[in-house]
Image 1 (cartoon, rainbow, N blue to C red):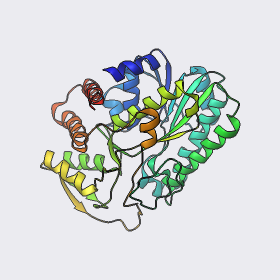
Image 2: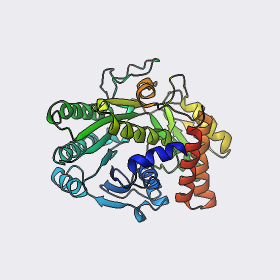
Image 3: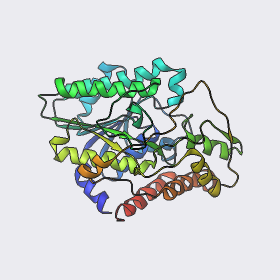
Image 4: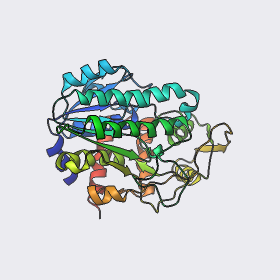
Length: 360
């Protein structure tokens, strides 16, 4: 547990705010931080519909939480000021690409104004604080290159979700270079992750959750783009990246204002159909049917170059793709069939991943 102990020195007894703590990634991050001895404060606008990872691990019973609308900037500022956090991880967002087409206004409001509220809260905090703002791999102007996008590549986006996330980064950079330029107490970095999969995600419009829900009901899942390639990675790989970035940012002020990709190795090229076959091999009753949506435009190829994270943070994905899928399916099998203590099971997966980190 070398990595766990290293982080324990960073987060132990520290006040850590996680926005979007009721969400998939946010609940995994809050759980890991709790294991490290941090005083975790979750901030979200609502409780996720059941089932959810947040509910499955009963997260509300062992962290503090506030339910506010992050678009309410004044209320957000008051809550953050009262907590006086040492760390902030901002994950709250409208994060479903498909939903952004039907609700573009809500997507822009949640992603842009919500982040603006966090930046305003940081401006008025007047204490040492490390802030990690999570955006997306979809911030890049996607020309579907095999090389993988580097952090200094052009940002853009043709759909509401991608454009809102790219615009969020312009907003962040404007604060870093102007409003925060003389603030020696604040350090902020941006994290961009690929397609994250893991146990406890039931979000609509995401491939793996849609597959799991269909499998649990013995129905066929509808597949839009079977040959699309995505940077699939396990949620714990990404959470470890966020924690690593925060720990390094605390020690190294040169990382202030920097953005980092956290994605699988560039040689990893897994298509949707390959992922489906992995699931089918493990869950024989799993079925799918192909059906294109001509109104929903999606990129067929998306890759991240994470060499910067490897060089400056010594971070890289450790899990093989087969191990990633195995961890995901084991979690859901336990949830649906064995009715285990899912907090205990989730912790066991964190501990297993820590053993993987020691693998060369």
